[in-house]
Image (cartoon, rainbow over all chains, first blue to last red; front, top):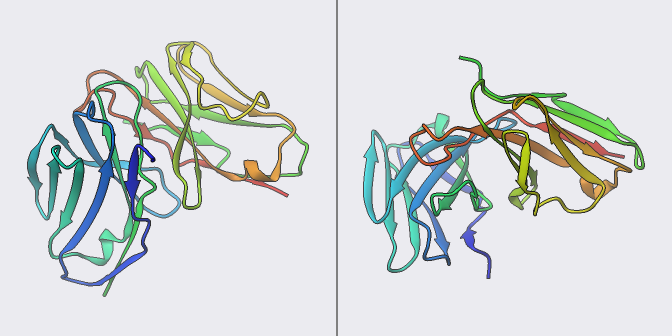
Length: 110
Length: 116
């Protein structure tokens, strides 16, 4: 079993839709849960992070962590064509070692 | 300020040749990482530097791969006798302990390596 599992997509949605992106993980030592966004031919950039369980909201984006089921989610409300990118989850135990999911490719259609 | 830069942005090489990929981290970042990204494979960790030392080289796939960092700054990833399976995007990231999360990593744009 991989440490982090993520559906690679692609996921195509119409503009304005609510998008749900998900990851599962196996290591209970993970405490920080990051979401990186990667545009085509660019490096990943940190979008949001959550510490431990719970929700965190930033504008149209909400990150959610359920440590009991080892499940991480990123919700995008009112999705825009500019949100079209690959989204990578990266749980971390507070060390230098990041374990990245394979990424989910999202396309938001105008 | 300036972000992480990598050069070249694209590299096409013939099988069996050696290649050098360069990374310039954000000034003052003590930690530096190399990753490899292949289609459908996510980011594969290669090596981690703290200063000029590499306490974790566990991700280097074979002895054809090596990396060094000098002056606590620039790093070079060298691939000797390249093989077609080495074709991928090589990403560099740097971090300091003062980020929003521990070891928050800032990525460069990557070097796209194609071995023909």
